[in-house]
Image (cartoon, rainbow, N blue to C red; front, side, top):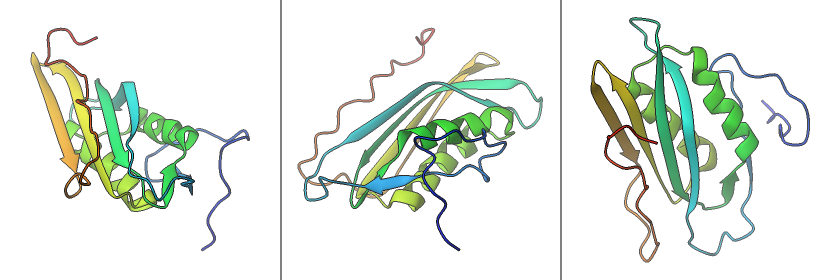
Length: 150
């Protein structure tokens, strides 16, 4: 099956589910260099699969690109597709990390999902592939332990 054209630079419909969302990649012009790319999604939303109530998280995605970069408009559309997706915090966080890793095949990726409290308990979920490339500067994700995050 042929890869669909990039969503960048044209109007596209919002995907209704994470499965139908298209993640785009573009060639990395600095593929000979080790560097870190960070995407921050401070207003991530999904649905609790049991109660149907909204869940909110602050996601931080760090990756060391290899041959491909993750195109940011497609990431925006992908994360928005979770707004009506029923899944637990752990599933959403790991699903996003694995999907990105599968699409762009980075040297290394990690995702931190900092979920706002439900029932008074915040849940933080972390997932990564392998080890950080030697010599790569990886700053802290910058999300404070829960005290009314923001």
